[in-house]
Length: 332
Image (cartoon, rainbow, N blue to C red; front, side, top):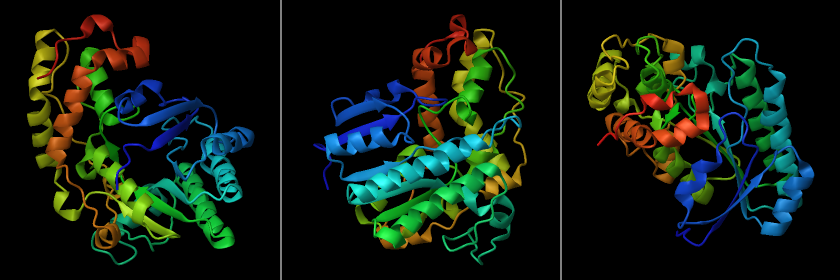
């Protein structure tokens, strides 16, 4: 199906990792309207649905997992639960044709994912018990439950996509690759960054294709896991090799500018985080014909080149966190 003439309405509060410039690549491809606001604002949401005659809602919005122990868990409830309820109520009221909730594999819990609690050899399937090991994961479970409840209670056509760790362009500094780039350009040795989550992560374009498949052809009331397939999993040693091969040229250029070195790069052993990405994706493969198309090495190369060639973008976004005098030439 073609979506060249589709209109996309983006509602975003632009808090934390939100950035308006992320929409620039859509120019000339789609009709895009951007509205800055909060999904908890029921009057705003109702006004958007009335004005733009929305056919489908795809909810990517969520409050990210706070790594800082002082982070307020109540902030998860505001967006991940209250915000979803506002969207669902409006979707039912305005008879929206489809509602897609973008969730996360962390709802299964790292410990039980590692043990394959549901009997799967490839991680938890969609029917596995939900065993959160953080307040963030608990809030995502609550949001998923509201979505499925709306389907059973009012007949709203909903589907849930539970994705594993993602990587690609336009990620915030909370993610690994931007952290590594900023650290290197800032003159720090790249040695203590956690690269384990990428060992079984999914390139963002593959995730987007999965979301579109579920939007168009997913069964109402169903959950679909999205992540790397078992044959894409690699050991720490192989991952470090791919990382070095993909990024070595750029790091050499940084070293020539007196920045940092890749020599001390280490792979941390964090099995829980790695296991959290190992979900059984056989359902979306068999029902909708989806599977990842971008190998890890190719995805890493694409991602690093994007950040290297768009330094001015993330310097403007993150300001003084990146010294402008350290910016070096494009990565070819």
